[in-house]
Structures are given as structure tokens and as C-alpha cells.
Length: 267
Image (cartoon, rainbow, N blue to C red; front, side, top):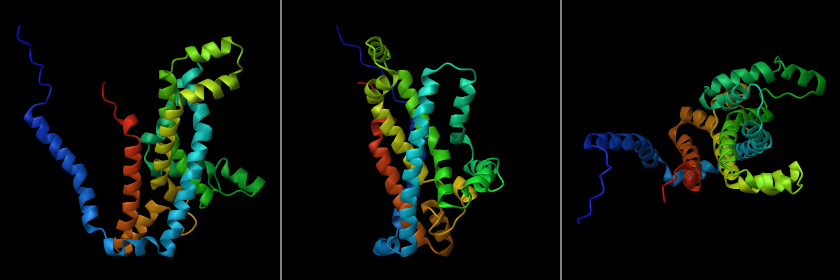
């Protein structure tokens, strides 16, 4: 008996043509950036004192924001995945809101809460002398606000997909909740925790709208790489392109590192 050939699952040629157009639309801006890059003066551009301050500040603030995202995002993901409580869907929606909220709107919201006249910010300044608006700490807060959803979304999905029988077995054997969390749950979701952490860091590093709205654009204090790109673009292309290439390189590295989590192919 002659074998029946497998069905050709390729889309029609017209659809493939549109796919090519879409790929070119995404690819050509990167080509333009690479072609216009000042390769001869790239190192000198990146080693300018002002640019060095910007790179160092961005690294510090993005790492601090990522640490805060892990500190608060992990408990929230655990609560959303494992605890039934009234309004859980609403809390989940709030946790994911920065994903779709325009960053500048998030910056305005942070001003109203943590600004000098904000609900919490005024109390922090009057009672403890802590000011967040227009400071490096404000940059960290703004970056944490936009980075948190990436961690929460990744971890909650992993927790919901996890086989809970191992946790139940540990509890049956008398393990305390902290022991179960430390010895069973966290090791099981460690790949997702790593993926969410990398995504949160990349988002924090590339944040613009909430940062400039809440923290301002002060060189050496609140001017991160995306803000410096905007400033450099007004004085010339070389500096803006050099900093843009840094962000492109980081983004590509994150995509390569996350390829197994972003795209899964059937075995």
C-alpha cells in the first residue's frame, strides 16, 4: 500500500509574502542602525565621561529595580497562583496593568502617590526626610513599576503549571511551609525565576517614559541610557547611535538567552 503523503501545512504564497514584508519591516531599522553606526569613533563615544556616568547609573538602577521586582514579585506570584481570595482577578489585573499602561501615565501615577505632594511621598519626606521624586531612588522605583509584571506573569504561569504533588508529599511528611517553599517550590520554578528576572532587568534597563516623568533627566543622577539617547539625538547622531547599539546588544543577548522560554517547538 502506498503511503499517504503528509499534508503541506505551509500557508498560501500571499500569506508568505506578507510575512516577508513584516520581517523586513522589523529587520530594516536594525540594518539602518548598523550602517549608520560610527564604528571608527564608537569606543571614544562610549568612553566619554558623561556616557560612562549614564551607563554606570543605568546598570545600578536596573539591577536594584530587578532585585525589588524579585523581592516583591515572587510573593505576589505565589499568592495569585496558590491562594483563593476575593478580588484575586482584580489584583492580577493591577499587577499586569503596567504591561499595557503608557509608561508616562505610570510616571504621573507615581508622582501622585510618591511625589513631594503625593499621598505617600509627602509623609515620607515630612517624617523621614526621604524624597523619591527627581532622585536616583525615584529611577529605581519607576523601573521597578514597569518591570514587575514581567516577573509576576512568568512566575505565576510556572507555578500554575507545576506538579503540586511534590509539595503535598513534603507537607505530608511534616515539612513546614518555609521548608516546602525553599526545598521544593523554588527549585521547581528556578528556570522560570531566572527567565522572569532577566526579562524584568531588560525592561528596567530600557525604561524611558515613567523614568523621565517621575525622576526627571538629570545627568549623573537620573539620566539613564534611554534618556541619554534622547538627549544625544538632539546634539548629533553618533552618541545616540552608540548608546542605541548598547541597548540593541543587550536586547539580543536577552532574546538569545531566553529562546527556550520564548519559543517552544514540539518534540
